[in-house]
Amino acid sequence: MNRLLGVLLVGFICVLVSCGSPDEPSKKSKELPPPKKEIKKVTTTSKQNDKKPMSASTGASPAELAKAKEIIAGVTEKAIAAVDAKKKFKMFCTTCHGITGDLNVNGAKDLTQSKISLEESVAQIYHGKGLMTPFKGILNDEEIVAVSKYIVKLRK
Image (cartoon, rainbow, N blue to C red; front, top):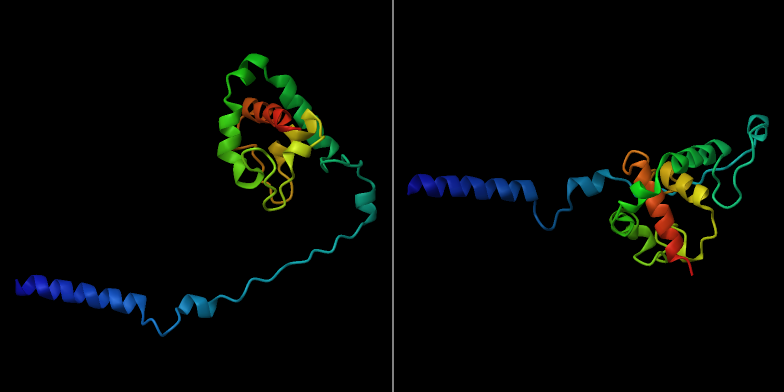
């Protein structure tokens, strides 16, 4: 019995020491500086001017659009139909776009107002854009095309 009380007392002391007193702020809050907002200045160099223009609506490069066309050509309608695109959309897209596509969180675009082509949509999902995650290693080609086609259904 005394041994059990001793173990409990030592455990209690360990918890108190690791938590600290309520009047004293934690060491982590002292060590971390407040987050700073970064402002990136975009400059144009002659090297950037030599590149081909990007798509006006998505900012996708010609190489990204070519990859999107390759992905679309490489999947069959049967494989696309086998994907539960609504489920994939709910799993990966609703956090920022919302269930109906118009949530607009973290700079996400309103998908109900989107006018981009299927190729641009596939390129954006595959390569990502801004804060949007590139899904090339997360979803397979059939899933990316299926979600892109599902997004068309969300448009008003």
